[in-house]
Image: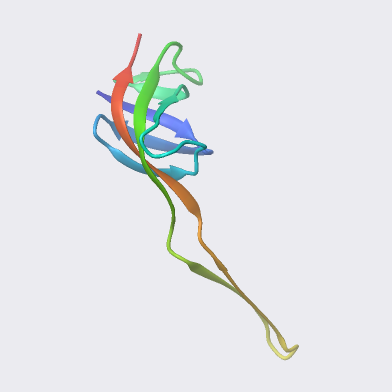
Length: 100
C-alpha cells in the first residue's frame, strides 16, 4: 500500500518500511507517531485529505543535518557576513498505512 502524507509543510510519498527524514517532531527515539493528513492512498485522492485514513510510524532518532554556510557579500563596501546552519530533523520509519 502506498500513500502521500503531509507533515512539516512538505508532502512525502511513503510505503510500509520507508525511512523518512522530516522536519523535527516533538518525540523521542522509539516513540510512535501518527500522521492524519493523508492526501492520497491506493490511488484514491482526498479533497484535501482522506477521512479516517492515517499513517503510523516509529521515531528512529532525532538529529541535525549537514552544516550549510550562509555567506552575504557586497563588493566594494567591505561587507561580509558568514553564518552556519544545521537543520534539525527526525528520522521516522513507516510501519502501517490505515485506510477506512
